[in-house]
Image 1 (cartoon, helix red, strand yellow):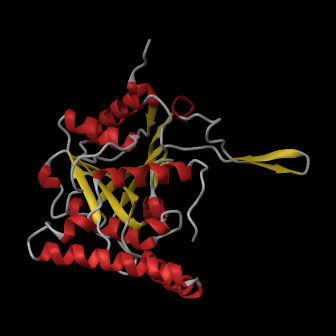
Image 2 (tube, one colour):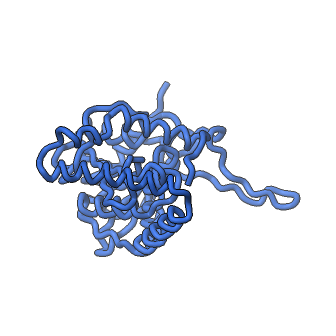
Image 3 (tube, one colour):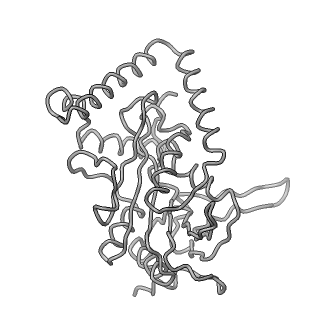
Length: 306
């Protein structure tokens, strides 16, 4: 017999009126190329915040697949890094309140979890739910990288360019949450920052900056850049240093991707995606393969050279 989704979480008794607030979410354990989503979540949580709801991880997490860290000191267990899946209450630079749900992606009971989040959305009067992460793309770090947006209503996507065609990719709790919220009549949007595939297993703050900008535009929140800009500049300088110090093959790969990117942009600006541009445009199958390869690498497969 199933249990009530409300049994999955506990809510603080003194949560203020949040009618019209935005709920951001990022879950660890699924695709996050360049750690774009994790870096942004850590950045947002770097300021003042408090937990207003806590999920029962014992019902949602498979400890044997993602064993929490314990600290052993000489002759005793000293500490246990317990996993937490919680909703934080934060404020943007204009003191506008917003929420963020973060922690490990549930291993099971996805439907009950989505129903539980729905109950919180309706309890607090949340107007928009937004998720964010990074995806690997065949594009060079030397060119402007975009963000793919998807939503429960087309007008929520804004000016973001859609991915070509249809594709089937491994599912996630975040994707299911967006899908179910749409079925339940709630606005939800998701953003996937593009990360050069050769940097997918590295830390790439520039993609986090793109996510921050996309979230700000979609939600109206004034999210401070803070130290993310400096981190992105330092990472870019280190990438250039490593490429300069590597063999010529690395530079050749970047130059080939630059030519491909420039040809696609030129064709787009001419108002046509035919002829040469189609040749360079990734297919749905190629994108799906990149996603699956990235997930396999995260789960213990071979990592790309850096």
